[in-house]
Image 1: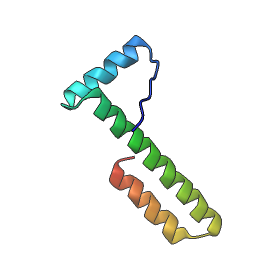
Image 2 (image 1 turned 180 degrees about the vertical axis):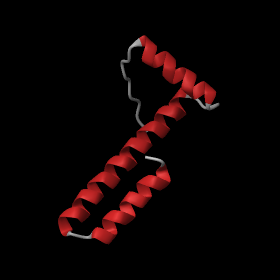
Image 3 (image 1 turned 120 degrees about the vertical axis):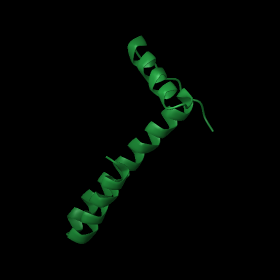
Length: 72
């Protein structure tokens, strides 16, 4: 596992801490969840674009359903 330092404006940092607190999770866990969600969204987007290029309408629609399930 690695450590990542991110510089954020104080107001953004405070809002993220508040969000983590309201979900009863640590800031570290919140950042993990948000990062994972962003990566899954990007992967689904890339798969959708690849399917679109291959002309697979069925596969593209399945990927859109996957995004709906994730609430994206």
